[in-house]
Length: 204
Image (cartoon, rainbow, N blue to C red; front, side):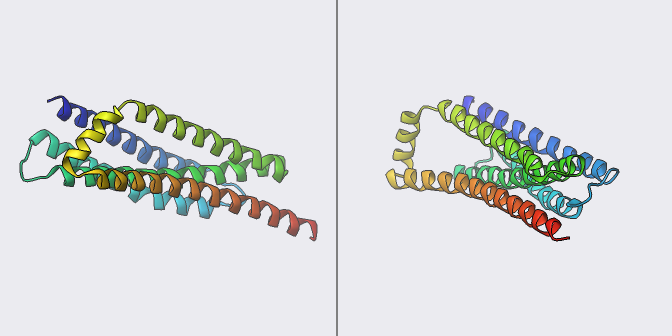
């Protein structure tokens, strides 16, 4: 029963977070069109709309897992439930990455309009992304400490052997690296955009 309750709590939390962010996306989208920045409104709107299906998929997958764990259906295997949870987490991660990118662009464009200084404006997305990185790393570390690694290794060894442990560890690393790479690529695109704008303004 404890395992089942733990699963339900985790699923419920993911659903709440995803639905709250969906509401926040719609609110932000409505507000930014009331006071549009000079540039970037199309890109931000595009990114926000792309992130929307990711959070909807996360809610849908978590709802299925919640139903399976509460109903206790024997036809549904543990592996299938784990796949649904992994899909929900990856979907949430990509959606969150896109939203963070959109908010960084939005903050950069608004600050650029108010200050007219691109270097100062770049401080906002840099600090914002640094805080997000720190929070994500801290959350991953705390979440990792929550589980007993020795117990997990023993359970995985009994079920699937050491190869399965290596595969799961590799998948987790690949997912985290993908999110970090997306952040870094976005940051470089933002820097190039600022440098290009400065270069064009200098020759006008």
